[in-house]
Image (cartoon, rainbow, N blue to C red; front, side, top):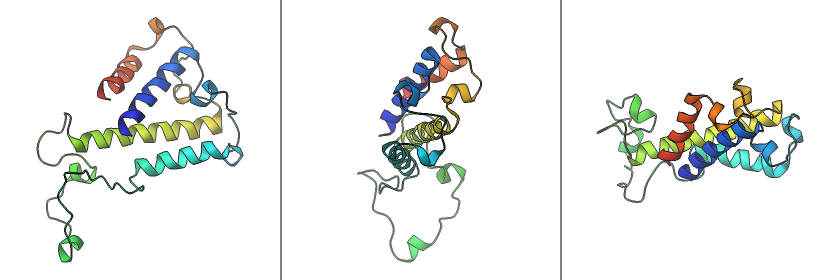
Length: 159
């Protein structure tokens, strides 16, 4: 799901940069309305994406080959030395960058949050993610800001 979210978010940014329309406007959905007037299916998608991004849908950041979680008193005790990397869900031993399972999960969840919050912002303001940041949209690819193109390329390559 995380890789699909990264590809989807990168594609939506590229589509908005070229067409000048956000995700919802590209799908011809109504924007610039109060959130409670949005289509129920869209609200479900936003909620599902947010729940998936925070790990509330059951995965809890675990993988098939992970060891079983501790039980009893060991489960209640926070292990000493748990740093900021482990709290963010990043790999606590070994490389910070690279294709580790924890890093991929973290970046995928960030992409899910990006999609969800850009949809919420577009429903309310009627502007896509880039237009909300006052980045010029609706221009040819050759005129798109280089940093934005690097960001889009990063999401495509990381996925």
